[in-house]
Length: 114
Ligand code: HEC
Image (cartoon, rainbow, N blue to C red):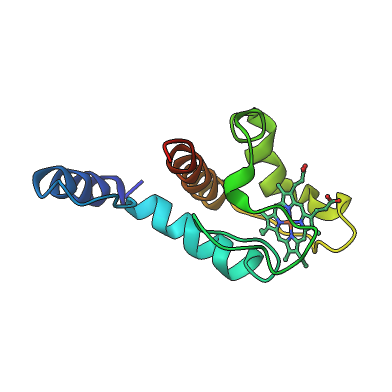
């Protein structure tokens, strides 16, 4: 993984310049961007706002059981989202699924601390 060093540098820099209210790390930003691109048409992706699709739950409402379920990341990769009639099928790469999950977990933590 060639990017690991750069990631660490970023993390170090963020720690060094700390105090910023809440910075997403590079992976989380990538995850968020993906979800915004693919899912925001129906789901509220961020910490606030309503889902554009009335039946689609906002991502911040996903509970621990879903986010920390081993299968969830796998399902992102398998494209098992066809279970919902309005939802198109997506296939995330392993890295993209990890990034998306990482973002969602972070979002969840922030929603909890409010
Ligand atoms: C075209 C609209 C649409 C798009 C795009 C969409 N969703 Fe959904 N999604 C829905 C709807 C509607 C539901 C609720 C379906 C239901 O409850 O039967 C849902 C439900 C879900 C659920 C809850 C399923 C469960 O097991 O409770 C998850 C997780 C989810 N979506 C993830 C995603 C992700 C990740 C993306 C982007 C990669 C995405 N969705 C894109 C419409 C969409």
